[in-house]
Length: 111
Image 1 (cartoon, rainbow, N blue to C red):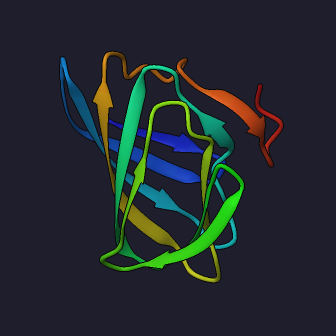
Image 2: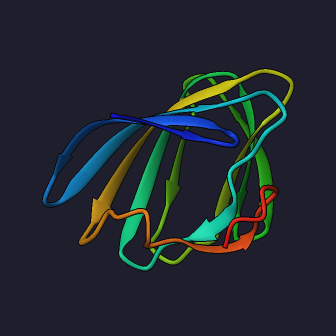
């Protein structure tokens, strides 16, 4: 199942009661919203590209082969720089619905 977003798209690779796995593609010079979740943590594995990562207002770059851990409640964002970024996201927790998102900043005016 693939879902289009203004920043790119994601595809759900697998889902069980205690985890969900997604492939995520971020278009060049686009970024996801600055957000957090109350019921899930995330682990990102960068497959390709160079990304700017923000976690709780701390910014750093990550590239191919890098991994990032995001704890439940941490604000986070990934932004593709000059090239697309592809990564695998493994969610763990108790709930994985798209409605467990609180957005603090969003380039596409989503609530």
